[in-house]
Image (cartoon, rainbow, N blue to C red; front, side):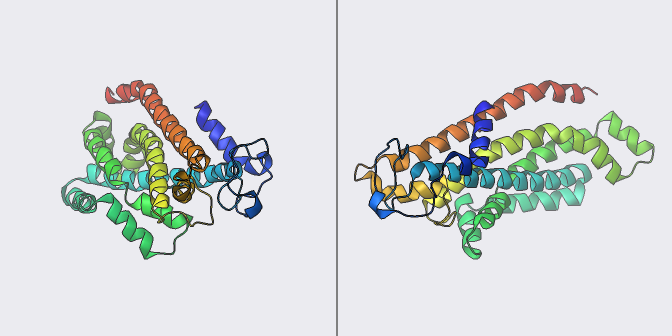
Length: 264
C-alpha cells in the first residue's frame, strides 16, 4: 500500500520533483549514463530518463486504473443482469461473453487499436473492452447464488421491484468481487499497455510511458546502454507486484465480510 501511495504521489508531483521536460530533446546530452544531474541517465535524444519515468508513471497508472474501472464496470453490469434475471437474458449475455473470449486477446486488442486514432483514450477503451469477461462470469455466478437467498425472496414477497432488489440487495453483496477485480485488473492493464507500447501499438511515441521507453530502449541495449531499459522495466515490475500484493491483502481482509453476508 505504501509503494502504491508513493507511486501516486510521484505521478501527481512529477512537475515539482523534476524541472526537466520529458519530451524536449537535447542531442548534446544523448546517451549519458546515470549521474547527479541525470539520476537515470539520458536516452538517444538526450531526454532525461528520470523525468520520463516520473511522467510515464502518470500515463501508465492512468491507463491501468481507467481501463480496469471500465472493464469491471462492464463486467459487473453484464454479470449482474445475467445472474439475476437468468433464462434468455442469461443465455444471450453469456453467449456474448463466450464469443468475445473466443479469439486471442492480442488480436482483439490490435484490431481495436488500429481501428481508431491512437491516443491514451483509445488504449483505455481497447483494454477495457477486451478484459471485462472474466469479471462478468464471476459476478454472474455470485448473482445466481444471491438471488436464492432468503433476504431477496423476502423482498420479492413484499413487492419490491427488480430495480430496487438489484441496487439495494444484490449489488452491495458484489462489492467484494468488484474491489478485488479492479485491483488485479489494474496490474493486468498496466502490463497490457506496456506490451502494446513495446510493439509500437500503444501510447503515441511523443507521450512518455514505461512501455514506450522499453520500445525505444531496444536499439540501445545491444550497445551496452542499459539504463534506458532498466528503470522503466523496474517501475513496471515494482508497480505490478505491489498491486498484486495489495489485491491479495484485500482479498484476505474482505473474506470475513463476504462470509458474514453469505450466512445471512
